[in-house]
Length: 156
Image 1 (cartoon, rainbow, N blue to C red):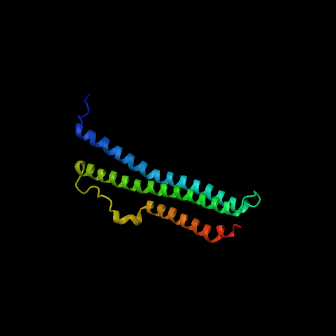
Image 2 (cartoon, rainbow, N blue to C red):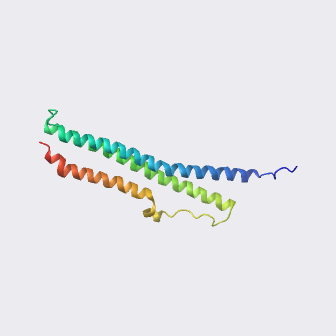
Image 3 (cartoon, helix red, strand yellow):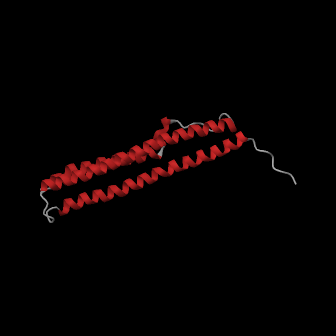
């Protein structure tokens, strides 16, 4: 019976490090969708609350000035959540770029010099994170525009 060939400690370490890097890249990619889901859920609930306040403030006996303040406060809260979500996504992009750089370094040492090219940040328009952040910013702009042009002027 033959025993398996001894594995070089450096090679074994590089393989484990490469597996870890790939797992981290996968996690960073999944986090974007988690952050988007949290934003969508909270924004839907809070904007729904603002619209409910707009529709029902008279029935509840709330003064128009207070109802306007309530709508603005809810939109400010959604804006803070949107800003935090966008910040987490941008930080995730930098994390992803760092792990990809490290992945390229590992494959350069282990396989070949040009086995894996590093990502080009100039291709940001092709990254789905760019469009998700754009969606968040666009939805916030729409909410503020709708509130400023329709909802707040119609209160009182």
